[in-house]
Amino acid sequence: MSTYPGPEALIYGLPLAFLAGFIDAVAGGGGTITLPTLFFMGLSPAHAVATNKLLAIFGSASSTYQYARSRHIETALVVRLIPLALLGSALGAYLVHFIDPNIFKTLVGVVILGVGALVLLNKRLGLEDRYPGLTARTLAITLPGTFIIGLYDGFIGPGTGTFLMFVFTLAGFNLVKASGNARAINFATNAGAFVLFLLQGNMVFWIGLPMGVANALGAYVGAKMAMLRGSAFVKWMYGLIVVLVAAKLFAGH
Image (cartoon, rainbow, N blue to C red; front, top):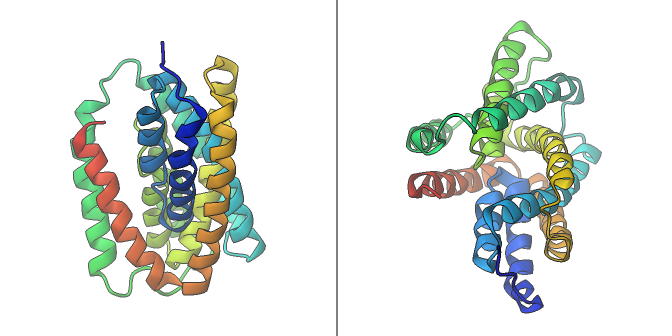
């Protein structure tokens, strides 16, 4: 049984949810803040993971809307990728019952550090929009990439949006549009997971709903900031989140 916190836990829960929404809207990785916060509040793993999806759907909806209304989401591509992300996520959630996720955490931590280094050391990568449209090369990068990252999302999770941004950057998008596309796919996978967790009955609504509102407000500000400041700002934030996600994976939590 969880030892449920009192309402005073929201004194630190709300600002951390806002911060997580801001960071997630810019570069992904917001769950590396909110999930440990929910554990620190005293929720059991089942309740913390379910409640985290409740608040995450607020933030991902908010940022997706902001990017979409400013035309920073490539809808024709994203609608083709969402089914693969959902399929991969469902498969990953199934495999987690048979394989110890801790076996892969160190490997994934190394991979995401390598990804981050590639983005940051290549001075031009992600700063200009060179998306060629729905070409064979675009689909060859994004279709398998989205499925694999969806599988990772269902299997382990931290940094899914950050990995998606890398795939979209490789496909030719600047980092602002890569973030918009990643947020849209994250919203779809969050919505799918939300329905499953809702049916399981593990959500703590009096915590998840107010933290969800704070997360959405943070995501609104983060998306606005990313579009206002441009890809150079997103690139700096991206490097920060890569380190945060890798640290979480290496820590084994």
